[in-house]
Image: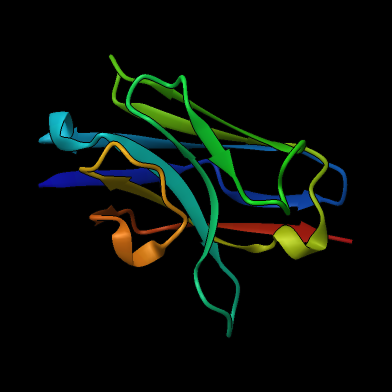
Length: 124
């Protein structure tokens, strides 16, 4: 099992920045890929970004390209999401996820482990 704990959410104004962090514990060697998803009230959980085990391959949703950056510290078992130029539509609960496969995928059902989520609210 892998346990994931997110931190860094909060309230920010339009155009501001936030940095989310996720710490993994447990059988972390089994986590080949890590990623971030988000879910707004009344909506499905959507893919945000993902990174492979050593950080040299990343994937982003079109809606966040150029604004968000995912990074991973494999030695420390952490993954971060730097969010810049935030918009009201970025408001959601953000979830950290991990999967055993080396392949990056945007499908939530393909991810094996999930954190509890952290709220991000962008006010206008």
